[in-house]
Image (cartoon, rainbow, N blue to C red; front, top):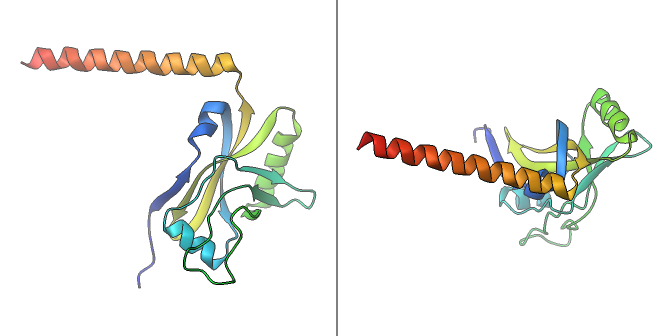
Length: 160
């Protein structure tokens, strides 16, 4: 059977872009069991409560990501919210650790996907937004949408 190519999105953390200002992003591999991979291939995962950390040993971990149990699994099935190790280069881990040491920063998973057959997670160094930041972003997005709508209707009437 030929090897998979391309990207297939499994889960996306839309709330992260609303609640946090995302800085630098990294792509990390995941250490998974067989039943976790089967569940991900079925498109079942949730990143809404998940976060990532770097422990004292210099290892990165994905915590609270919900990958439900495989429905056809046996007694060897995985637990849904277990901590999963992230595969990153040593230089990336030290860069992340340095960024997290400054106050107010956290490591948030942005999306979970398959890339050329391998499960990957995109993580970003994030700073929490204040309420007024969120309102300003919503107002900017609405203004941009209105401008595009007005431009589209103007162009539509010119052609006819």
